[in-house]
Length: 141
Ligand SMILES: [Zn+2]
Image (cartoon, rainbow, N blue to C red):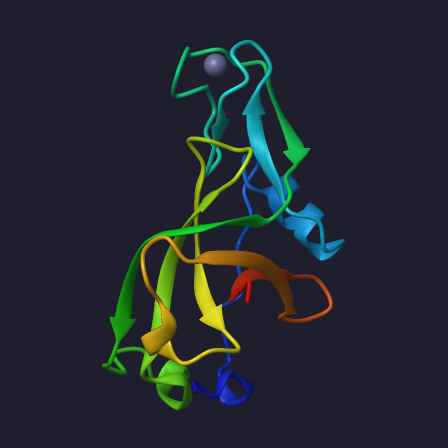
């Protein structure tokens, strides 16, 4: 299993579109941008709805449960900060009740070999420092 305890992650730099996502994650709530006109969820956040071009966008909490949409196994340590975790699974999660939103993360608490398309996962929150908490995922067993 990957050892994430020795990994020093890059710290996010929020902008006006992503700040609500990070503020919510700090409270251990997963919130995604949602168009108030057509109800489409989208991630990452944009200035306009990618479905209908509305600018009436708000962040709404989602369950944090979903399935693995895609994954890749990282075997190389191009970024040395991640060396202790190699090999590890980077996954893209399709969240239930939030169609259209795909959230990237790492698969924690399982071997990277457990990453398979369609497996159910749930969000877990990893505190990076006093200001940032990173949404990650683990398998729902
Ligand atoms: Zn829309």
